[in-house]
Length: 420
Image (cartoon, rainbow, N blue to C red; front, side):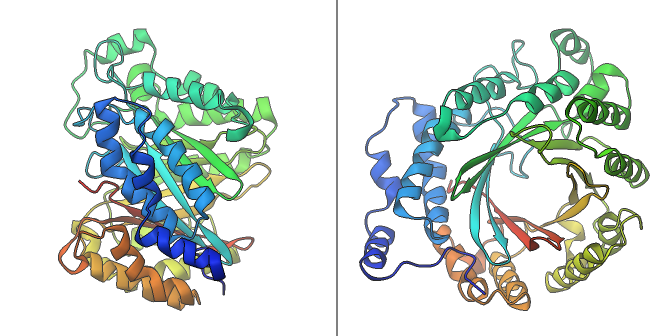
């Protein structure tokens, strides 16, 4: 089994990498030459740049890739985090941070660093941008203008979902008359970036509750009709999978304040569409129900994945999770496939970080991922070099798990993504 953190270089390249890791950190070099005098951006960079840099290093990205993606982050992600100190409370993290970094581990593949953000600008929350929609449009426009270096950023799905779930000026006026509680979702969009060997892969996210409030149409119907129009437009052939997802989400309590939708910024006929659910019932029985969609999914891959869910739950002492968060999941709908693919997220925030790190290492070992198991604890300590894992309980946020016959086991670990 190859180390899912990319293989370490040898010879002169290894010496160069070691020196960079110890002395000449790429993020330190970049920060010496700021391209902006914006105080907000400089402060955000100080909080999140070093962590992003260490993630790229510990997962084995080449020096060229480290600089490439650090520059991408500084020039496009950092300016989209909004005012500093933060004023707009993002719904994408437990701690209201508008940024979350993660590492994806897979069978026989190099690990991938990912960053998700809620784009924010000065207007967020004001009468000009009550539900934080302007920054997403600005960022998508900037990314689209990057050209071939960014890859083809297909915006067809983005415009489709904005039309179906974005909040118009008239709807904003209507919603301004409603009362929003402290836990009400008032955000509209998130965006995510996967930093791959082949370039940056971009994903969009949109929350559904605001549109339900504004239109008075049940969320399940809004979703069904939107995905139905998408199939008619792009010939996706995913009607059966969409129906299964909507039926179970209605039955299992998945349509609520926190339901959201995701897509890839690629050809609409090829993009994955993901429907996310969140539920306060954090028990193994509920996790099993979600994984099988209440018994709708009984194929060998789903059942193999269910075994892994139970294993991870047991190692994490899942019965102790009940007081620390919620259960989250998504169903991935693929063009031409009748069966959605489940992915489960277990909350980790509030658990002792050394316990979590050692437990994840044990889980990796059980999968035959020897190198992850051997290095994971040290890598986490390197990411948060000023924290003592034995005394902290804020660094790990989530762990997610998926399984397919084609790609095998798919694990992602999400981190508190600021050194502040």
